[in-house]
Length: 135
Image (cartoon, rainbow, N blue to C red):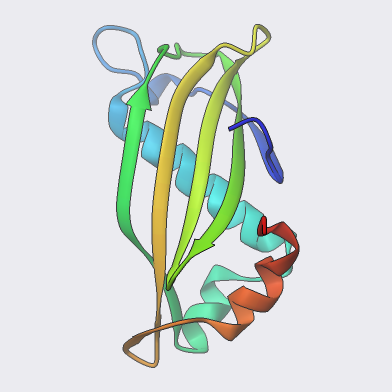
């Protein structure tokens, strides 16, 4: 996916690497989750405030394809796009290494909303994300 609506630059920290000197696979999930939370903030939504209002976006499915490893100290950019598919909000998230922009991971994250304890469509999310949905 080449069209992105949000980007976040980050840097690999030493403790995120495993014995091989590359980022441990689980940390990529942290990177893309942090990107989604920062995206929410950028559109005026607070993850914590949503929870207080009994709106809980949760991950229903996540897929990641690992392409190129990152190493300690390397910078990268996490990019995101979003689409709505039925009740799901599908985030297409890719990470690129800086400065060569080589693809590191490609991921798809399917999220759903639990509102007042029940699986529901979020009118707030539909309205907030509408400008980003492709027809």
